View 1 (cartoon, rainbow, N blue to C red):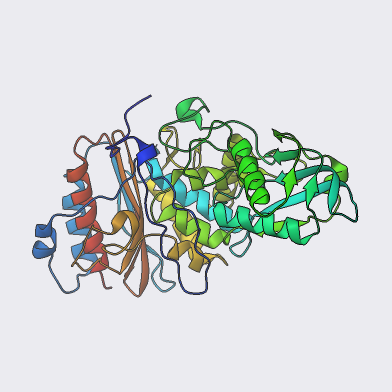
View 2 (cartoon, rainbow, N blue to C red):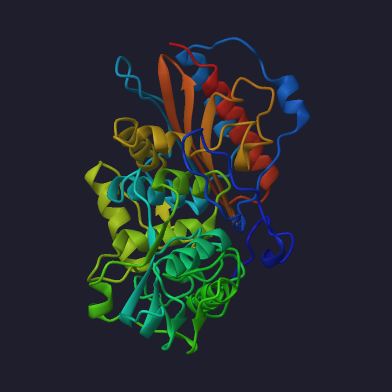
Length: 431
């Protein structure tokens, strides 16, 4: 496995704060592990050296051309004015060649999730029963904890499920507690790690508890947590926790307990703002899951590629997070996705999922005190030899979309400095 940039300690010891979401939108409840795309910084000298005022299209092209010459040769750039009155290319260089995306892959994953699942949709985790409950509250049968692929399931949700089970009149379960993770396949990782465990992402599962944990069997852990919460509430489960599929007869009955995730819009923000690999991969698998089909990484990437193709863009997707360096797209195709999302019904959710320059997530310390701060939102991307930045700036008469994909990078500080200077110039553009 190749070395990932930015990982300065074993990932199991790292944590990031849950990103802030607009008022009225649920916040994911569980802090999640970061990947290698950790926040970069801009030199204070960058803010001091940044010119103020506006620049014309010709001056913008000239300055971007000069900065592009300083980038590694295997880099590509595309900048496009999305305003309906303009709709023109502002700058392009090697924009049609596919390049490694790193975490810019998450742009395609979250856009597809918002489209296919819906910005307001939530992912359910349910408890079903099989058997009868007698007058003394004894369930003669099993209790089933059925995962839906919610990456945020944690202590408060498990406690809520236990409370609802007791409220349903159950005081004793003669059978087992079955943990059902069958909404997804049981591959724990992505192609980068041969679909096995990885230090850069918590194990994937259709049923997880506290997505930042490295349980050998996440579903088994979630079931054990529910059993413990039930015991605290006076509900005794006689049998052990097992990981199995819920029988149709039990699934056909109304659940005795249900909890729901934050909205897909909130999950998209929790994916893009801190560049969360685990959330990205869970969303990718959820794209392919149906009542008759398991969610898989391969199926999810197929859905992502179809979504991009239907909007005039192209991507070769290998996973949902960008950990695998086979994820590739041309700068022009990244911008085509960004342009398509400008008119999508989930456009606001997608736009707000991206961190603001100098304010949030992986951009919180980049471009502070410049024309780009608070005016540009973009997704970073960093793996070995790759540094990327793609998103939008409030510029021109509306928004300018850009994709800066640098491959063959030796100095990440130098690459980010070029990107930051480019974005600052874009933010200053007025026609």
